[in-house]
Length: 523
Image (cartoon, helix red, strand yellow):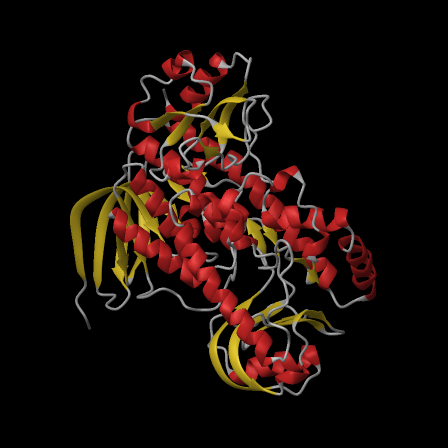
């Protein structure tokens, strides 16, 4: 019997983050940019290479672009497109066929045709270079963020899991255990604890967050495999009398969905025989799976915490909400959570903002999470292999083949509709800031790399700049001109890239600016 070796280090962090997936790592980076001392703990020894999300949406691309990560994303996308071209060659399809004007995505496996997209829709305007990246697999993004965390000095400990904690009004005492030697435990103090530890979140369960929602009705598989007989499979999304399957867009990638209830065991290893059986049942093709490189099971369990904060404990990512993966919303929803929470929590721990600022985290992110849950539920309803769902599917398919329908669905899938309910009448307020091209050749996103808020003075107005005095290193003030926006006099952009205040030429928005500075920066 091993002797337990418990260490009480006396070390105190501003924030402990449980989970070093993309959400936990990005949150750690944002906290560090804001000056917080943060510890991120992860039970796994390495980045999880299991095949998961294969793309990011526009708000995620914008967020990472604003932190200087666009070149890394672009390189990953080119690699992903090389794999797609290889898949087309293997199937004898034209790898040089021109791509659609913009990736449009799918709804419940109903593919949207990019040539029908209304690119003049104003919601698609102003994203800048971020709109050109999207095909970024989750594991690759995690590696990019791990490197970024190391550069920023975020302390990340792997093979360490949170096994318990006690929280009061002053602090959180966190208990940690080595996964490679459970006899080694440690206790650290923290001002705050954030659970980014996935859908089965230990933090959420121990803190007692309620987690209402709907029970699962499907078993799904996603995998990268070697197989024979694949020439009988159609590429892309396909609906059959049994369920749904996907083949591609990279060699060996398969996905199946069966409406026979959730799997009896979510944890056991996935065998080639299990994948082969599902693939044959759904497709009716005698495919033989000879090797499994990566595989995961999923369901449509759909739940959301009623609040993302309970005292000094907060949730982000899948710890706060779970749902089916259709539409690729999960990873993106978590990235949005991390961007929204990071700068706010850092401001609170540094004494730059009152705790009440954290109330805006649930207020802003919970409605978007609730929408995502319903968006995925609707897709499950359309995918059911029964006559009523199939009839409705035909109606939605017809709608999706119109310019109006394609544009509607693409806007929802891409996330460009997202807006926070912030005070102010200007149409930019509450929206993701347009990536303005500035007079010196830089773009707005270039001004946000430090994680500070940004006040753009586009009218060379000394009174405007004077109102920002006292904000110190919380705010970058730039006096410049912007191409394509001659009517815009000024704009206050929060650290997460959302517009908190804006005014056009001739408008006296000074009082509203002061209110916004006070609300978001404590100035």
